[in-house]
Amino acid sequence: MTPTASPVLSVVVPAYNAEAYLARALDSLVGFGPQVEVVVVDDGATDGTAALARTYVDRYPGEVRLLRKPNGGHGSAINAGLDHARGAYLKVVDADDWLDRDALVEVLATLRGFLDRERPVDLLVSNFVYEKQGKKTKTAVRYRGALPADRVMGWSATRGFGKRQYLLMHALIYRTEVLRAAGLRLPEHTFYVDSLYALVPLAHVETLSYLDVDLYRYFIGRADQSVQEAVMLRRIDQQLRVNRLMLDHVSRVRVTDRRLRAYRLHYVQLICVVSSILLIRSGTRASLAERDRLWSELRQQDFWLYRKVRWTVLGQLANLPTPAGRRVSVLAYRVAQRAIGFS
Image (cartoon, one colour):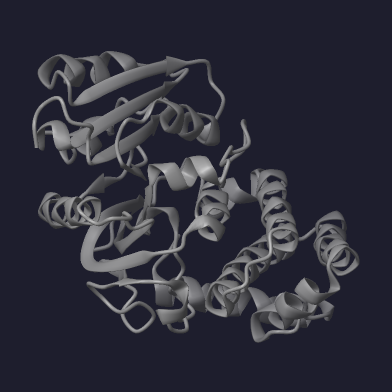
């Protein structure tokens, strides 16, 4: 690949007050030459995030770019990165996470092969690993069984996804033009928009491939992290906003492939259950009323979707009546947290 060619991969790194850990992320991304473009998006940070990123721009000219913008939240930073990305493919890496460099070498070889095809592949899926602070045993989310490895396929060639096999943002490398064709614009000043990133473009994905490597290292366990339960409880309004946007998307944008339709239901069911359990954990009458409102709105909006999401084991578990039933719901959620390894 010549230095003047477009990058194979753009990696967008949203960064807000990330000075303490940004270097770890960037160290995992640089040194691959012009085939990898690293776009750090300083989302109005008030610490040394921009200054640190600038040192990488200077050390790796042509590889690392710095975009600076007023604070707009995680979704706003991803939007800005997508607007400026020059790579054929795009991946988002949060500033407190990182990639495995050996796995990235394999990913790049795979993406280059895609670009040699008459029609490049729309989506590459790889594994991610929960790097939980203070926990020696790491939990990897892999897609064996659901996705045949090392082949290009349509959704019809996929199989059923297991209960822990969700295509989170960390697993996804989209073809950049797919994201743009999908009109992806994530809401600003809203946490948890990665769920929309992992759902909305799928309706525009016609071909995909699975590379069975542990690429993404997902760091969890910081007390101030957005996925910590206490933080999520404080931001439950934003979780619910994303939840409703996901349901609205699935209701409005119909897909014909039954495998993709089944997966999308699989994913929105998870998000509805997480929202419901958080509202139960909040423990107030207002929160329980909000849980009931979420399900009631869905029933009125799209009865078909309501039946597909509500009348499942997880959907029923999230709606058990009485205080005793709600304790069972939370207990089951705790068991799932320990089994899967998420925060």
